[in-house]
Length: 402
Ligand SMILES: Cc1ncc(COP(=O)(O)O)c(C=O)c1O
Image (cartoon, rainbow, N blue to C red; front, side):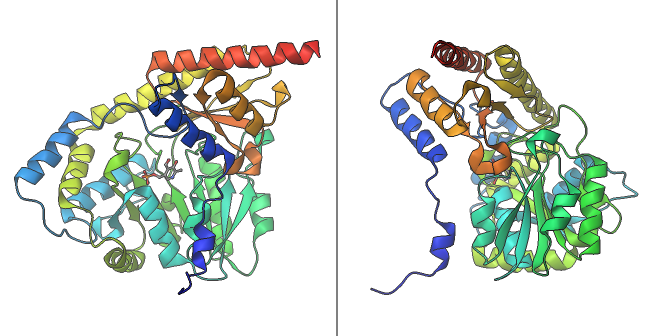
């Protein structure tokens, strides 16, 4: 037999118990069981109507051919304008154009593009954890080593410049983080971003800023590190419409950065996808230019749902809910129940058929927490909270009795 490339070992999903639980839940749900799945960041509602209409119209108009590989000019212009708008910076401090944008297959495609163009075998990338689950494979696939740097639980999952600095070696090439963060919901402040920028400049590093939740902020403000002095030339920013416009399945996003990076990203696009479908790009253009109100309503929906979880579980024995500043998840510290987060998630599922993720795989700082994705209708979420409450209370009572 011919052999497989060694990289397949780097991208193999470790099959963490967290995912196994999700797969089990989907299977049980298909079999007709009364299962509530709160394990994945994909809302139950569909993309805004005008977006769907734009895609249909584009297909009717014959936009079924190869597309512009870096993205159509009109979409790249719209993305540049939106990126500046949500950056939190003034136009005097942060200005990008279509020349700083490449359209990708979602934020995931943007992260992989960054990995391909910025990193190579032997490089180290400092990933601030808790972090999104694909980072490990996305950067390891290109030979880089992901070095996890804690944003500790005790400090509210804030970035710690001293820990970042300590992790730097001669091989360090980049720092990657998401803010608003999945799974913690932490939104990094300007001062925290300044401290990260200062380290990046002093050690001549890239910063890969995952801003997929940029428009979903409930406390504090979103700020783009690219807008800080000296950062535009060393930052690549990844984003998409997956979360802001409930467009997870369209696989459309972008990476922004210095013009030379964009040139490389264009070449990577030729090798990877040869252009995002034009009818999808038309739909994305409609989302950005015509669906601001829908995006605001989506943010409001997630804010309300996060509050439902916070309210309903606030008095649950053994649980400590952690209020997110942004994104669409609530972390719940379950250590007070005497169970590990993995045990709690599995036993909760067995007892109540509510699937929430053990947050430990996102990083050691989230150990002891489960992540609840606020992606189902309010009443379903409320019912899930009732079940979680019942389970935690039952565990608490058995613990007290024994
Ligand atoms: C932090 C973070 N980055 C990237 C992604 C991937 O997003 P996309 O659908 O845009 O590829 C997700 C999805 O959950 C995420 O949470």
